[in-house]
Image (tube, rainbow, N blue to C red; front, top):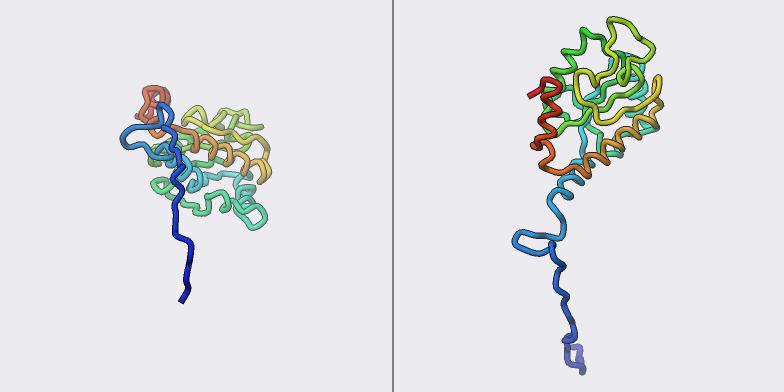
Length: 190
């Protein structure tokens, strides 16, 4: 049996400070909902690779053990648009392929982000011909451009990290904004 001769006492000199203006009220927690959702989205981006040529090979290296894209929350590749939120367009896109790319983009659920990987997807690359689309931003909006012909895996990872920066800071309501709707309407997407 243990005897304690000291009585238990609590500190009664604790002073609480009022919360600053703008950080109080009903439903307020220690974090804003948009920041919590942004953090969750940032670390769980599911990429849809749309590879047509040599940039796709570099992306395969990015997914390999040496570079390991899965450590950025992009472990699960899916080849169905309805399960992905980041479209990685890699390689030369012909004008015949443009409607297919646009349809894939439309089938993706909101929110969705697009990365143009390499010179061909960004600007047509060295293929300045009648049959090659001179940049995918002619048919779908692009969030991040990754330069290179073909870009190194480090550049692709950097592009995905730029998307993560966009995802983390994006407002939850941005996709319902008139500006975003106007952007989609300019591409003929409703």
